[in-house]
Length: 409
Image (cartoon, rainbow, N blue to C red):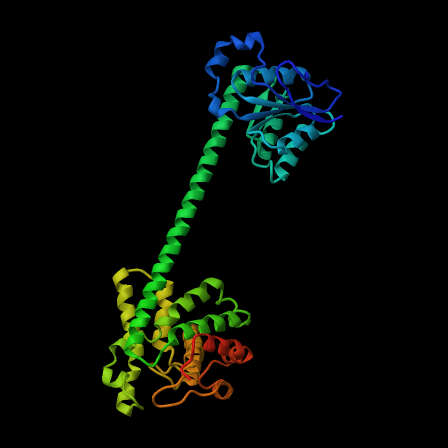
């Protein structure tokens, strides 16, 4: 019969060898010899370190001796005389801090008990010390290779047992302390990274709005294009051509970079930027320099920090090349096809879509249905064909974003 019980002093004697049982021994149950033992007294633990130790042995005598030794040092003790009972007690709350496990037991031996302890997520981190009368190097090597914490040869020497137990519990406490410190450090790093990301996002938005204040026709253009870029990149992430590039981190950096696409407009003269009508050819050439002004500003920022930042690299690609065309007739560098960086190709479609559906002093807003036709006709000319397809397949979602942020219709 298998039982588990908590015992008060003098109650429930240790189980007989033929009976599977487990028990929690009282820490006041001491033999006269051990109560006066000076060595045990010196090694007595503080009450604040009153951890539970599970002893597993099929011999009642060994359970009694070890129980007295450990209780005399101030530990709480659970005992089990069979493997199945040991597994049950090890998983019960409060769980033991350490297990002393006999190797040679009938039925389930110590090796099997240890294997099952390690196979259970609840008990796998409890350190185990093997107890055995077998003094053979190969057995000891096998035990340590399996992952036990220590190995004690019978007959039991109280001083050795207490020293080994104390050492393993100190190692366990140190390991837990390190785990706690690592968790605290990870939490602090996460907090600071979030704080840095927030500062970065706010700074980007502030710079983008600075450019926006110089161009009073853009309205919510920044918010809309950022949302278009995120959605378009997310849809493209499923495409075989882009799947290896557009992971979650890349998409997030891309969306964060998008608001800076027109930052170079702060360098365009007011008489051109704010002109209430179409630009002359000469004025248009000056307007086109906003791509170079913006990328040069980011290049200077990179020099100031003297390091490479993926986010700034993406932002610079968007700023400089979002007016390039797939057929090579765009500006400022006349790049064509895949020579145009992917962030710029995605931004190009998002920017044009928003410009077409928005009202300007020199034009009316174009209805969604007509815009779809225009973008479809520019597939392979102005826009990357696959990016165009991703947009057209989900155009209703892009139109919903436009309505959400209020287009200037």
